[in-house]
Amino acid sequence: MKKICIIFCGGTITMKKNKSGALEPFHDANDLIKMVPEVEKFANFSFIQLVNIDSTNMDPLIWTKITKTIIEKKMDYDGFVITHGTDTMAYTASALSYALHNINKPIIITGSQKPLKDIPSDAPNNLINAVIAATQMKGGVLIVFGQKILQGNRSTKISESDLEPFDSPMVPPVGIIRLEHEINNIYIQKNHKDFLNNINFDSNIITVKITPGLSNKNLEKIFFSGYKGVILESYGPGNIPDSLMPFINKAKENDLPVIILSQCKNGVTKMSLYEVGRQAFVGGGIPGGDMTIEAASTKLMWGLAQTRDIKKIKELFATNIAGEVTINK
Image 1 (tube, rainbow, N blue to C red):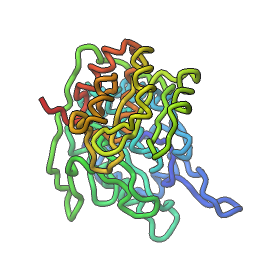
Image 2: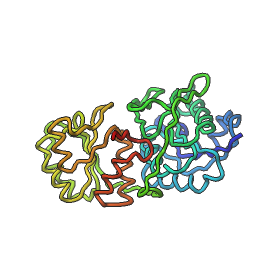
Image 3: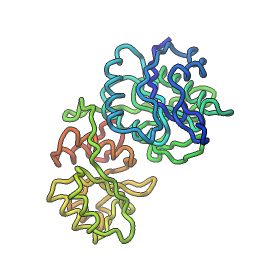
Image 4: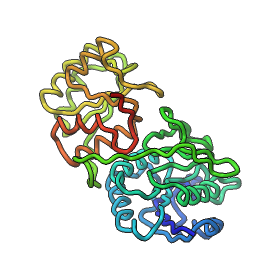
C-alpha cells in the first residue's frame, strides 16, 4: 500500500461543542485516527499535527508552514492529506498550488460540515475518500469533499451548511465519487522560470467589491494604508465606473498592482468588450481572467512576496502557474 501523510490543521472535522453549545477545536490527530480507523485499509499512513484551529484563523504564515512540511517530507510519502476547515479551504488550496506547483505529489485537502461525533457526520466518508484520492492521483492540490474531487485553485465555497459546500464554477470536477472514485480530468501544472521556489506570501493586499456610489476618495485612502496590491471585483467582464478612473490612473503612477475580477460567479474579465473596461485596462488594470477570488488573492500575495516589479506582477497574472486560470492566446 502507498504511504500517505495526514497533516492535521483542525477544522470542523476535529471539533466538539463547548459549554455554550458553540463548536471549537478539541480533538487532536490521535483522536481523528481512532475515530476513523477504516483509513488504515487503504494506505500506510502517519500524521503530523501542525495546528488545531478554526479555519477562520488560517493565515499565510501557516500556509508557509504547511508548504515547508510537505517539501521536507516529499520523499517519504506518496501523497498528503490535509484536514482543514471549510471557511478558508479554497484559499489554502490555491495558496499551496502556487507554493508547491513543481512538486509531483497529490495534496488532498478535506474536512467536514459536521463534527465527527455528530450522528450522522460527513467527516468519516470525506476523510476516507481523501485518503483514497491521495493514492490514486498523480499530483496537484485538490479538494475532496462530498461527492466531488475538485481542482483546489478553481474551487470556491458556495454554502455554509450543504454537505456539498464547494464548487468549481469555471472548470469541471477532476473526479466524482460514486461507488468508486471516477477520475475525469488530470490537469497539468506548468513551471514558470521566474516564479519557481517561493513558499512565502505577502498579505498586505486589499479586496474591494465595487458597488454603485463607491467613491474615488475612499479608494484613494488605500495609497496611505500600506497595501502593496489591490483586487477590484468589478461589474460584468471588468467594467469600472468612470468615477473610479482617477484611482486606477494613480495606481499606475505609483506602480500599485490592481487586479480586476468579475463579480459574476461564472464571470471572465474581457476588458476590451466595453469602453468602461477598456479605459481601465489602458489605465493599468490587470485582468484576472476567470480566476476565483481565492485564487487571485493568494496569487497576488505569492507574487508580492517575490517582487514589487509591476511588470513581473503583470507577467505573473498573464501566466497559468498551476491551472488556476485559462489563458487565451
